[in-house]
Image (cartoon, rainbow, N blue to C red; front, side):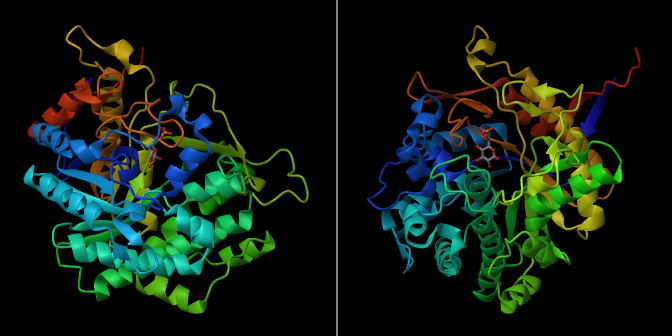
Length: 477
Ligand code: BG6
């Protein structure tokens, strides 16, 4: 059955990206590597076909072109990050690198001139590598102070034009891949450091929120938030054992950031649980007060795929470093729909389920989908004779996810908008240009030229008509 789905009033449609994944290194100075740059240089072997942040999409030279396409599509907003490692020439003193700041200022002006609202994230994995080397990165409390100084400089420079700021993109990711799972350079496993990083980033979110308010940067039409990758978790069955596994998964990967950011507090018993596993971080009572007083205005949520778990069948070896999988095992649900390229399950209802959760468990706080999208390999095979990639699979993906998002709004969730990852194809950590996500193709063979995919026109029409057609397959056959 074909249904016409209308976008709710004021519901925005945008697209996201980040500085390090698009800009390229042009003009980058000695000592301005981010952690991602350093990882790429140190262990390039694992970066798909050797591509990485060095050139990326050359956004620094081509943002004008990208904003023209955004204008043509009618995109309401564009989210990217400010690259901490490049915006400052001295991280201790927060001395601004004027050359990078001038580029950034022009970029923001151009975005606005094309009718697109900029949304800026202060860290999308771009922690300066020198802070990793000197202090162990977010393991150090001092880095929280440096982050606040940096944020204030950013507000001073761009706060007159940028209304929407975010502390982090996916604050749990780097330390989980590095310290918890040991999957990435520099291959140093340390579960306690993992928790300390989580904690310091939650604290930094509150501290920057406070600085934003107290520095007078928060005008009435401005909002400060953070962007959290929620791992939508489903228990294999309704048995207490499976449900407990899902609950612990949710606690260690989701509530660990959602609770301090939105409720201003960790749940009762959490610190005891951390202590029982030997990973209780260093904290101060005054930090908890700061968090309580400074919840964010809203949250962006990155939602890609569900995670399915069951209670453990095999015990974890005694003496193994703590990992949340102490409580769960992953569960491979028969019959699940897959994005075979990325290896992720497709289950569009994750957006609706989270919408209801925000409504019922998080005081119906304002939120938006900050990333959702479909990564596909070898997209050139879907090119038509005119040269355009016919990404109908991505259009289906958008329709289904938007359908469930709008259902969430209809049922009272305070969901404000939806952003695709990403505007153009871009460089992902390690996967580089392997999985293409863009509405706009980046042609690596031809000077990184841009070309709109069919899905860009789906966005364009949906924005122009404030509606789209959705094939709701309800027929029993
Ligand atoms: C998101 C990140 O989780 O996933 C992005 O915020 C990333 O930075 C995106 O690029 C897609 O990643 P991947 O590995 O599927 O290419």
